[in-house]
Length: 89
View 1 (tube, rainbow, N blue to C red):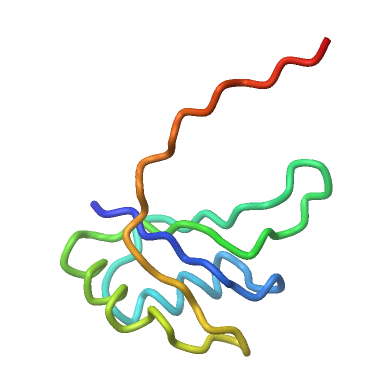
View 2 (cartoon, rainbow, N blue to C red; view 1 turned 60 degrees about the horizontal axis):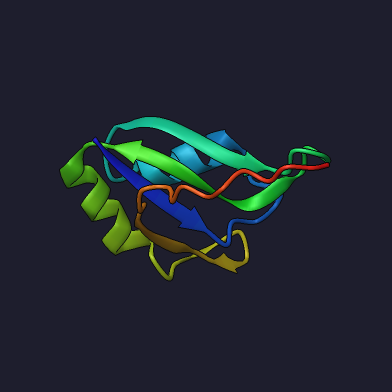
């Protein structure tokens, strides 16, 4: 399985909207849209998990494509960097 980063999503997009978009290129294992912890509002990006060959086809087809009025940024997700935890005194 390959994790795909999807950026510049319209804030009104749902996980189902994104699943339908990526399903054109193969089976979608999961979709996770990122929301703000405090407000619960969409942050305009998320992650899609697909098998390797379908993921590559989706990346090539959708990077730079317009979706609901916004130009998508689609690429293979990089591993999350470890950041020091903030402490509040």
